[in-house]
Amino acid sequence: MSKDQRLHSVYNPEKEALKYLDSLNISPHTRFFILLECGFGYLIPPLRLRYPAAQIISVHIRSEYTAAHLPDAPTPDAEWSPASTETCTTFLERVIGDSESVHIKLIEWRPAIALDALLYRQLVGELTRFIRRSDANARTTRHFTERWRRNTLRNSRFFADAARKTFPELAAYQSDDLVICAAGPTLEASFPAITAQLNRGNTKLAAAASAVAALRARSFEPDIIFTSDGGSWARLHFFEAVRCLRRSLIVAALHAALPSCLLGFPILFFGDGSAEQRAVLDEYGLPRVELPQRGTVTASALDFALRWTTGQIFLAGASLSSHDLHSHARPYAFDALLVQTANRYKPWYHQQWARTRALEAGGSYKLYAAWFEQQLSLYPPRIFNLGENHPVFTFCHDGSY
Image (cartoon, rainbow, N blue to C red; front, side):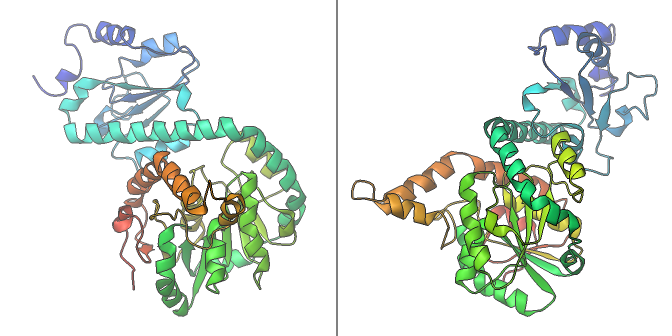
């Protein structure tokens, strides 16, 4: 018996598929079914009958099981195979909303493991990580939705000026190299490499808002500042930006917390692709710039750079970890908050230790590292390391000096 024949029952594959669905615990509120190699599609008709409003997405191990090769088989709403020009994760991000994890059901057709066990397990891991990231985004969205809406309303004071600007700076950035500074503790050791790269010329300096204080303490003034944090505390990062001798271009999420002192700065707003944020961009005549929610501004900055520039991209301070008592490069805007609350019962170093341990225990570092590890192999050969970043960035060319 061939491997293809082992995918389904030789006698009654429709009954086999129905029996398998009956054994699964499927929520009636499921909106997306991801079928991992459903073969000839026997699962699709009963799913459509039971969940008519749900979308059925097929992820194939072999391209010969796609609709193009099986015209008589039931057709899913969307499908991916290794022959696709985009990665499975990119495909899922395009067809499934950013915060839909509670409405996703992954259904594995286990006999397909006989086709390619290694690829099958790789896809299971990739699909599982996608659902976990979606779940993290969903929890963040549920927690911060009202705050984000309030921030978007407050940010409307910047919209009229942002809509009038043509952002001529971007024309220069599109061909220049770009150094992106994250706020990880390894940023401090990367300053000599950053200086050497900037001295080469035709290089612009970009930074997460949380890294601006550390950069300015070493006389660096970024050309671009990225922010996506909706928490009110994030405004503290911009007090150093206002002290810069030049006015940096601010690339900000619509829901980011922005202080009023940024009035007059060039601000380029981006949405997350949701219908609500698209409506805001269109209503105010803002450029339609959309970046998926990534949970970390460094990933958003990298997304922006890959879409808007053609030069090389140099990454510094992407530690994705804490070093001893330090969770970020120093000076850091939030350090003052710990100093103000310090006393003999709660000394500064103990607060700092507790904060770094909480960040590590939260699991976000591992989540971001898994995303970068998965995506870096797909990025063009344009990304380089400056200094000691997280080990996952060894996928990039080592641009250390």
